[in-house]
Length: 235
Image (cartoon, rainbow, N blue to C red):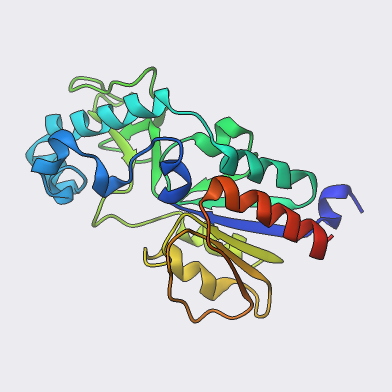
């Protein structure tokens, strides 16, 4: 049996809280121009049809901020866990901070900010060079490129893949998310009964889940404590 096969499978569900510590504002806390708009005006298919320039500007600004950000100790701690566990990260975040920290297995539920896709063919996905996506940037089929983001009202196609990962978890970790965002929060329903679950968040979160250990801290300080607990009890 190989080393990776003998390791316990640790599945992490991450949310906006872990990236907020790197200076990535949460979606509803963009400030500036975006306080003037409802999220549906910049993050929905209807918004794209009505005002694609505004939508592109919104995501261009987010992409510019992402290029200035760096992974924090929370991201780096999850990479550290790969020495001891078979780690899979399911993230609700559209940034690439997990990958830049060094995590090898990352599934993005809501898309990726540094990628664009064809408006005509969702299978045509491209890396964005720099921070700006403009009107007139087209795919190989000459259709306008749009952000590779799952907007409000669109199907989260990767949730099936995520559920299949959750079904195989030996340990499940939630960090930086309130467990109120669906369908991601529903991944708990796919985890095997009785496995240990860890929740890292500084806020009071009401949950009925059993076998739950709560670490009431931010990711940057909570994940090092998680590492200590996991090494002590599950290796």
